[in-house]
Image (cartoon, rainbow, N blue to C red; front, side):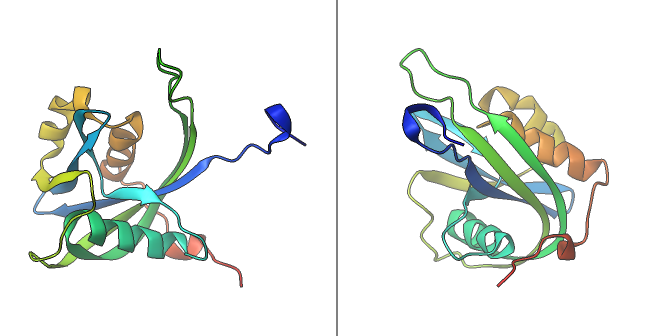
Length: 159
Protein backbone atom coordinates (compact mmCIF):
# COMPACT_ATOMS: atom_id res chain seq x y z
CA UNK A 1 0.00 0.00 0.00
CA UNK A 2 1.18 3.46 -0.66
CA UNK A 3 0.70 6.73 1.08
CA UNK A 4 0.10 10.04 -0.66
CA UNK A 5 2.32 10.90 -3.62
CA UNK A 6 3.41 7.28 -3.96
CA UNK A 7 5.43 7.32 -0.73
CA UNK A 8 5.08 4.78 2.01
CA UNK A 9 3.99 6.16 5.35
CA UNK A 10 6.44 5.69 8.20
CA UNK A 11 6.12 7.02 11.74
CA UNK A 12 9.08 8.52 13.59
CA UNK A 13 10.24 5.82 16.01
CA UNK A 14 11.46 7.31 19.28
CA UNK A 15 12.48 6.16 22.74
CA UNK A 16 12.16 7.87 26.11
CA UNK A 17 13.52 7.06 29.55
CA UNK A 18 11.79 7.74 32.87
CA UNK A 19 14.68 7.93 35.32
CA UNK A 20 13.77 8.30 39.00
CA UNK A 21 16.01 9.20 41.95
CA UNK A 22 14.71 10.08 45.42
CA UNK A 23 11.21 10.72 44.05
CA UNK A 24 12.46 13.09 41.32
CA UNK A 25 12.36 12.57 37.56
CA UNK A 26 15.29 13.24 35.27
CA UNK A 27 14.10 15.75 32.67
CA UNK A 28 15.69 17.83 29.98
CA UNK A 29 15.00 21.39 29.01
CA UNK A 30 15.54 21.76 25.29
CA UNK A 31 15.18 24.50 22.73
CA UNK A 32 12.63 23.62 20.03
CA UNK A 33 11.36 26.18 17.51
CA UNK A 34 12.48 29.08 19.70
CA UNK A 35 10.81 27.73 22.88
CA UNK A 36 12.35 25.97 25.85
CA UNK A 37 10.35 22.82 26.44
CA UNK A 38 10.54 19.94 28.92
CA UNK A 39 10.94 16.30 27.93
CA UNK A 40 12.32 13.06 29.25
CA UNK A 41 15.65 12.03 27.82
CA UNK A 42 14.31 10.95 24.43
CA UNK A 43 15.16 10.71 20.78
CA UNK A 44 15.05 8.76 17.57
CA UNK A 45 15.96 5.15 17.01
CA UNK A 46 19.02 4.87 14.76
CA UNK A 47 19.60 2.16 12.10
CA UNK A 48 20.80 -1.19 13.47
CA UNK A 49 20.16 -0.07 17.07
CA UNK A 50 17.95 -1.90 19.56
CA UNK A 51 15.25 0.07 21.35
CA UNK A 52 17.03 -0.48 24.68
CA UNK A 53 20.38 0.67 23.28
CA UNK A 54 18.71 3.77 21.84
CA UNK A 55 17.22 4.61 25.25
CA UNK A 56 20.61 4.26 26.95
CA UNK A 57 22.35 6.36 24.26
CA UNK A 58 19.76 9.14 24.25
CA UNK A 59 19.82 9.39 28.04
CA UNK A 60 23.62 9.66 28.05
CA UNK A 61 23.72 12.18 25.18
CA UNK A 62 21.01 14.44 26.58
CA UNK A 63 21.80 14.31 30.32
CA UNK A 64 25.32 12.96 30.86
CA UNK A 65 23.83 10.12 32.94
CA UNK A 66 24.52 6.43 32.41
CA UNK A 67 21.45 4.51 33.51
CA UNK A 68 20.33 0.92 34.01
CA UNK A 69 17.05 0.05 32.32
CA UNK A 70 14.71 -1.71 34.74
CA UNK A 71 11.44 -2.11 32.84
CA UNK A 72 9.46 -1.32 29.72
CA UNK A 73 6.66 1.15 30.50
CA UNK A 74 4.75 1.21 27.24
CA UNK A 75 4.44 2.06 23.56
CA UNK A 76 2.65 5.27 22.58
CA UNK A 77 1.33 6.46 19.24
CA UNK A 78 0.78 10.20 18.75
CA UNK A 79 0.23 12.59 15.86
CA UNK A 80 1.63 16.08 16.37
CA UNK A 81 -0.83 18.81 15.42
CA UNK A 82 -0.28 20.64 12.16
CA UNK A 83 0.88 24.21 12.75
CA UNK A 84 -0.39 27.30 10.86
CA UNK A 85 2.86 27.36 8.88
CA UNK A 86 2.18 23.79 7.68
CA UNK A 87 4.82 22.18 9.89
CA UNK A 88 4.02 19.41 12.31
CA UNK A 89 1.53 16.67 11.61
CA UNK A 90 4.21 14.01 12.07
CA UNK A 91 3.31 10.65 13.54
CA UNK A 92 5.36 9.29 16.43
CA UNK A 93 5.69 5.81 17.86
CA UNK A 94 7.46 6.11 21.23
CA UNK A 95 8.80 3.31 23.39
CA UNK A 96 9.22 4.33 27.05
CA UNK A 97 11.53 2.69 29.56
CA UNK A 98 12.02 2.95 33.32
CA UNK A 99 15.61 3.31 34.52
CA UNK A 100 17.77 3.84 37.57
CA UNK A 101 20.62 6.38 37.46
CA UNK A 102 24.08 4.81 37.68
CA UNK A 103 26.73 7.46 37.06
CA UNK A 104 26.92 11.09 35.93
CA UNK A 105 29.69 12.30 33.66
CA UNK A 106 29.68 16.04 34.49
CA UNK A 107 32.22 16.72 31.73
CA UNK A 108 30.05 15.31 28.96
CA UNK A 109 28.87 17.87 26.43
CA UNK A 110 25.10 17.54 26.01
CA UNK A 111 23.37 17.22 22.65
CA UNK A 112 22.77 20.33 20.59
CA UNK A 113 19.54 22.02 21.63
CA UNK A 114 19.65 20.68 25.20
CA UNK A 115 19.73 23.61 27.63
CA UNK A 116 20.14 21.48 30.76
CA UNK A 117 19.24 18.28 32.53
CA UNK A 118 17.25 18.74 35.72
CA UNK A 119 15.53 16.66 38.40
CA UNK A 120 11.84 17.48 38.92
CA UNK A 121 9.19 16.15 41.25
CA UNK A 122 6.03 14.84 39.59
CA UNK A 123 4.20 17.93 40.93
CA UNK A 124 6.78 20.27 39.39
CA UNK A 125 6.45 18.44 36.09
CA UNK A 126 2.66 18.70 36.07
CA UNK A 127 2.84 22.39 37.06
CA UNK A 128 4.96 22.94 33.93
CA UNK A 129 2.56 21.06 31.63
CA UNK A 130 2.32 24.06 29.27
CA UNK A 131 6.04 23.53 28.55
CA UNK A 132 5.91 19.77 27.86
CA UNK A 133 7.28 18.98 24.42
CA UNK A 134 4.29 16.70 23.81
CA UNK A 135 1.55 14.90 25.75
CA UNK A 136 3.81 11.85 25.67
CA UNK A 137 5.97 13.43 28.39
CA UNK A 138 3.34 13.19 31.11
CA UNK A 139 1.68 10.02 29.78
CA UNK A 140 4.84 7.94 30.26
CA UNK A 141 5.37 9.41 33.75
CA UNK A 142 1.72 8.84 34.70
CA UNK A 143 1.95 5.23 33.57
CA UNK A 144 5.20 4.79 35.51
CA UNK A 145 3.66 6.31 38.65
CA UNK A 146 0.63 4.02 38.22
CA UNK A 147 2.99 1.04 38.39
CA UNK A 148 2.90 0.05 34.73
CA UNK A 149 6.01 -2.01 34.19
CA UNK A 150 6.70 -4.84 31.80
CA UNK A 151 9.83 -6.97 31.65
CA UNK A 152 12.49 -5.78 29.24
CA UNK A 153 12.35 -9.22 27.61
CA UNK A 154 9.00 -8.15 26.12
CA UNK A 155 11.03 -6.32 23.47
CA UNK A 156 13.26 -8.44 21.30
CA UNK A 157 15.63 -7.57 18.49
CA UNK A 158 15.59 -10.45 16.05
CA UNK A 159 18.86 -10.99 14.15
